[in-house]
Image (cartoon, rainbow over all chains, first blue to last red; front, side):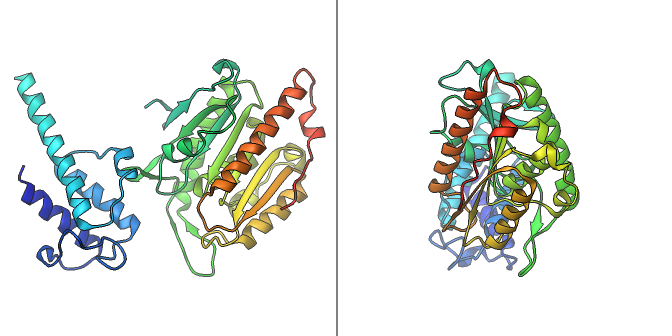
Length: 99
Length: 240
């Protein structure tokens, strides 16, 4: 799983939540997700997690998401990248263990 | 996570009472949050209580569940998804029936915030025989529930705590005050409080709910061994 691909998909999903044309290269990690930045509302933001779950076949932990403060694009991308990476690593370990 | 009648839940055992005999507090969270929200906020509640925090059945996203969707229309009551609400109420009613059956009758209290408060009120006003009391913060009585209330004697003396934000943009304080008037007409044992907050649940509101619950448990303890005393003796309405 390439980190760049996860990052690009996470950002594109955020931009779609705002119903803008995907232009992932026009924003950076410091861009606010909500007011003053992308303007993604809390409900649309939650739904971006569901889209990412569908794409990568994982389920985000309720408490981890609920207890994390997501202010900027960078915070969101870092969280998603870590979760997707950990999920991929678990899958590899299970496949090796079952081989 | 355990599940009963299609609803997942977590529990916190009482610190001071044998769990088998403990009164139960059922927590009903609001829109777009989850069971741990109220479970964490009620850590300091009466140690005699066994606490059950149920998760709403419909997922929005991680850590975010709902009883039903709704749209906000300026100047109007929230427009709810009636099908989702009806299904959730059926599911929750079955859950509460099972929970009440596990414990001695009349020892189950409800606490709901926002949409969870609305669900708590729906249960309390449609199945009052299942519960010992109902606390609501910033929820509302749905019109369909108000239109189909049980006979007054079924509600007379049933303890209700109603907390409402005076700056609530979703369920305006005028709605809270109309609910107060309606519940007073019904002769419930009403504690109505208002807070300078919006739609959230504040530390002050939680402290008042905690105090209210402890008082009800104390009354319950004093009434133990006597029959039929709760409904006839507990009309201690507290003014706002």
